[in-house]
Length: 315
Image (cartoon, rainbow, N blue to C red; front, top):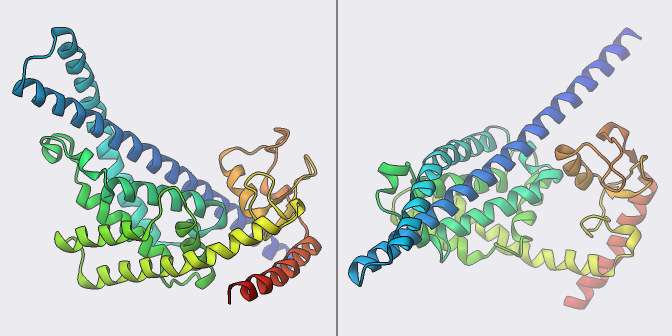
């Protein structure tokens, strides 16, 4: 009895520790997203004003009122950029370090989609066609902005989470699928561009570059598999789809506060930022969620049948 009580206490403590880690990861992602977005947007404003000022000097002087407005906006953008850029560098460095040290929380289903979308969006900002918009005068001396370092550390996160790890292939595959399923920002060409920049500037070792290319290839291969997911979601009955994301449920749970059925990863992600039922705002915690093993088996059997149909139709 004493042993059982001790095991229960240990299990409960481990669950609480994991929730604390998950909440920390969610907040770290939120902070990283916010700081990078604010930093890059302020640098874009600064570049736009600097460009107009150069054009004004080359041609005729702009009206005094416009020049005054630009000076005020430039001063404000410079002040905010100094603060945001420094914090963004520190936060991305922490993300790269922690994703190498302990990848598991970053590969969890409840956060992996948001993380992948954030990484892809900022990779596009740093290596995509608009990256030149971030080049401002004295950017390293004045704002401590080093886009090459940011790009190097951001691509390190992909490698830490998207190649083999002690957490097993399932977690790695989940991250890879999340990256290539992001239709807004993901493209294989973007990874090729990032690789070229890193190689040209000698920002990574040959071994690190090869690992990045290996990850990019994995995403390219997984993109084909994501079409199967799209097929399944288009064929699935509403009862098999998560009511918030319209994605196929893999781990169904019932919300006792509203009697709705959701995917465990989706509702856990929601509860990390807001501990309430998304349908009626009643207080809700992960411990209150009720697993539905029979529905899980039903969905798995339906999925297998549909996958056989899909494979037959694509041969």
